[in-house]
Amino acid sequence: MSASRKSKLTHAAIFTLVRRIPEGRVATYGQIARLAGHPRAARQVGYAMHQCPPGLPWHRVINARGRLSLPEGSTGALTQRRRLETEGVVFIGGRIDLERHGWQPD
DNA sequence: CGTGTGACGCGAG
DNA sequence: CCTCGCGCCACAC
Image (cartoon, rainbow, N blue to C red; front, side, top):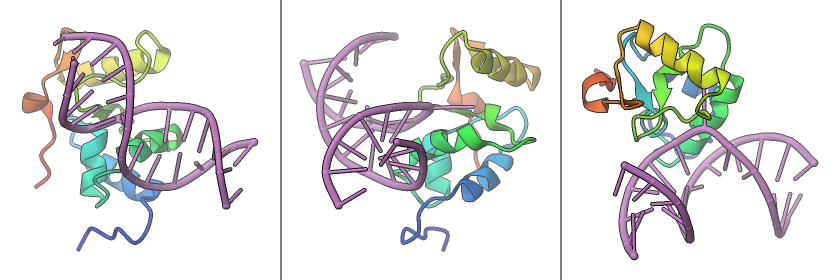
């Protein structure tokens, strides 16, 4: 009952899911979109991150390759990486092992 | 209402 | 491992 493809994927729905990502775990843009009932709206999730409200764990959202999508070296990318490492997420060769840190909703 | 754009994903080469 | 191309979705002009 969670897949209402008649309506568009709203930022609010995306934020709600992002908030559910536990500390020390990460989710991909596509995964969030899928959980929201819009398996093809991964791009929309990324677009929504431009509007992420204070307190939202946006840093736990990465791309399907296990890499940060923000421009490498940018302030945002550095902040994201630092916050993730602080939570215990390990970067191997600038990449995160999704098998190990990927979030699996119950 | 058409066109361009992007914190994406995936298949092919 | 890499780059390139196409599909998707919502939004700005």
